Length: 472
Image (tube, rainbow, N blue to C red):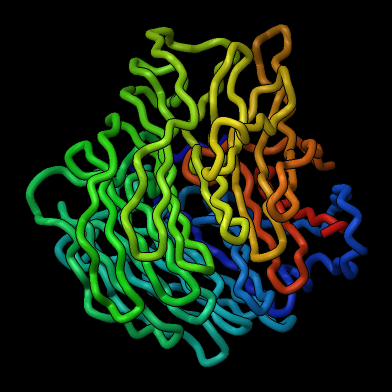
């Protein structure tokens, strides 16, 4: 596990960006095999670094044209540096960012076959701002989009999402207010909209999970849904493609510690999922000093969110360590994606043997709940991803406890769901023991919308191992 001293929190940020297929220059992966419905995961390459690595933001993202971004951070003797690496069409360009990016603060998204966007804190004190940099063949463009953003360890002051057409939605915390703006591939940002009054407490810190109190998603038509936790209430608002804000919707009262995720479908529907509890200890959720609840809601395009659905609930416990407990402080804890118009949620649950990874269709929660991780193992969610007409993929780390109550080795596992179908059985991917990390996902996943090929990755101290499935 990568641990960072609280007094020093500035890593290296790096991205690898490859047109026409994720990491083709690293992996040399063959063409996809014919669809067989049977998972056939293969190693697709390893990215190594001289320092310890963790993922930045979602780790892997794709643009509609099949260009992909792999993003990571490193800890070079806990020195202060910030470097981004852009690889496009087999040409690698090394870009040094203007100022350091705090640990866990980096957000990275693919925009198209030639551009990626990186977001992070620049400056300090009264001059601090969350800035978005668009990197492409023409160099970099930059805009400070959220002034007054102050970074704290294990919190994320802004989150980003891309629409696949060169627009980036940015939701952040400016003091006690959630603010939203939309930027273009040219690095030009629109007017920053304030979503709530300055009174009260805005949560950007759900324990150790980055970005947990904020969530944003943008649809292919430019519709944006933004969600935030304020005064213990989960609120959300729509923004139309024309920039008009809908009314604030008060969705649910939540516990003090919250993990939150959002998605918008190609047809403009939205889904939100969250897990919350009351506990000040780091090794959470489950068990906690309150009941831990995973919940969700959905909305039609631009419309009202439905009543909250409870996906799972596990009871409170004052024990320092639960049965088969591991330190679950990593995001995402919960995730949501659209399999075409079907909203799918995944979350980390808890049972007598430790943590489990579960998933459900939000259209039919009760009947569709699946436990994805193998029985008897303790598993923590890494990622959930989907692509139009390509189904979904989930990835996580799992381990078995030995007689010394040590959970090892930590293996990378994944499961796939065909369009409209339940997830198939899990696959354990080949490779070394992987790292549970504090400030980034344990595992990352994405589906290339151009080929239908899923990709998953995990970190092993100084390297990132990538895998793909030859049966999309």
